[in-house]
Length: 199
Length: 84
Image (cartoon, rainbow over all chains, first blue to last red):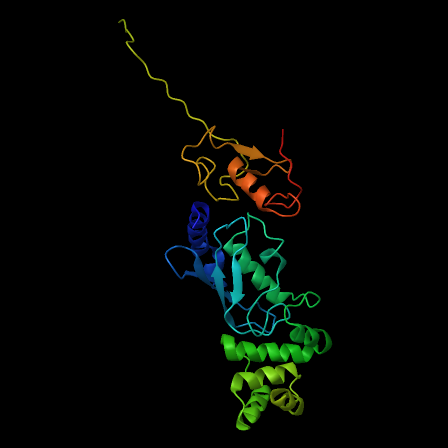
């Protein structure tokens, strides 16, 4: 790896470890190898959002050309958000693409992702299904996002009514996550979700 | 008493006058050089943009060469112009 990339990540890593946000448990960063090329990030769901109380893990890959090109970041924890793929965890955020600047750091990236959880951009979606629900059925979206946060990110709101519907489809022999995705996609209408799973 | 000076050695110190301690691109101290250089000083000078932000010349040149679209300051995103 180029000298500058590894050296900068070492410094950034030490900076994040000492930062105020880490002390308050808002963000976390761990090394996955000694070469400083792969890291694991963690962000807390922001207050007053459906993600509140959840913990979201991120996969961070540092390119050899860092900091002249952005780090590659995706969600490992499954999440229901218009700008994050519910399938792959890929993120649509301008600073991770063409709006990257060499003065940004892993700390500012993690804080920007936290801000994205507070303020979605449904008109620039990564997941069109989630974005449609966000725009057309805001309360269903919030409930779904809370339920996903409970199931995948250790969130506090169980959303028992939604969980009962997932159990009902499981009883019909469908796999749990597939059933949850189908129900979430079909605004929790059991009949439509069943058709979706069969087709 | 008379003192005869037989020899003397002068020592000077210098520092860059910048508005920051570290280069925002490589995050190395301005008192040190960029990661590609070995000795700080004239071999690895600092440059200023019209926006007043300051970087190691090697770092800002690499950034300007790597950005595909406009040439922007990595700190404030204003158009980058070298300050004369």
